[in-house]
Image (cartoon, rainbow, N blue to C red; front, side):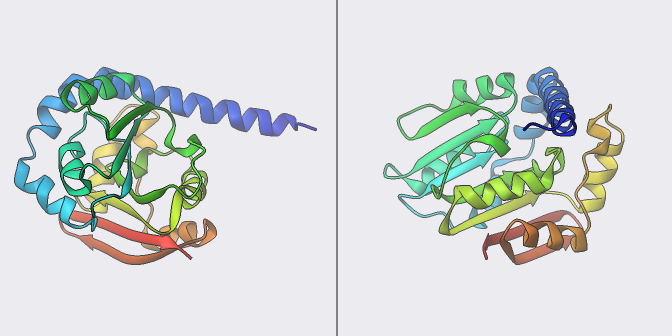
Length: 214
């Protein structure tokens, strides 16, 4: 029997997703010009090195945006690999698809928490995404299901946690609530989702987590 409270929770979650989709649709072109193209190739190359990508791997670029990491991922996984690029915003995906297409990359507009993948992914990359997930516990439980037994999850920001949270605090509702939790809360969230954190860096201009199935 479906509980009324469960229906309300699902409706509230759907509204949170809708609000973020609309925000990033409106931001897409500016994001492409100011953020992705402005970072510089050396930054992307350094970040890609952290993911230990190998030929033949299946990679999920969760919240791929306009596709800044896509060419670097494809270069590392080669023709034997597969890249699944997912974003909630169809306009972000359109920008990514326009630049990068081929038999080894698959674009999906969806909530990354609801893909239904089971033990398929070698590397799951959340680049500048995690604060925007309305239900972080739900997302991590899904990510744990997506990963192969030896797969790895990465959460990365080219900024400190404080910089990320301060920036988001000035965005419109509900984006102003999109925060990176503190280390203790993250440890609890990962443990509850069945994930072990291997590396956790909080540096002046960089935030990095690497995790695997417990």
